[in-house]
Image (cartoon, rainbow, N blue to C red; front, top):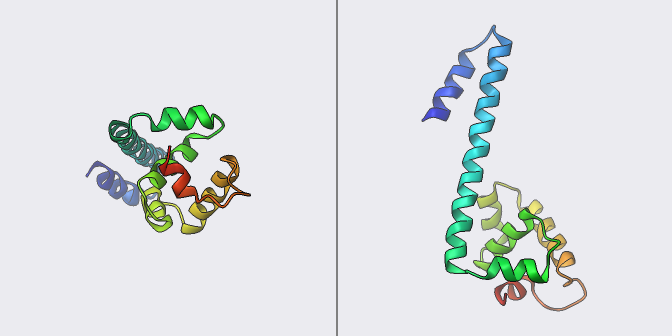
Length: 122
């Protein structure tokens, strides 16, 4: 509701460029905070179900970024690449690339172990 009101105000602003920039910045901040809040809630609920997943993952692979950890958590839930792309608002190709980079970071490039199977066993 708030975001919709701000977008309406932004579209009505025509002459005051500085005000329009400020409103645009507020809209971006709200969207970013909303995304971060959703991820924080997801990670809290995920940790309740899989209480030691992140600690095991960090112990075995401390070089993973926060984004890598999030992708691993979504893979742990047996989500497809397309489902992960919808959740993360990324393209399917972006998620495919992320999965390839994850295989490399996890040391699975020369093994016949599937990424989803490896993560599900953590």
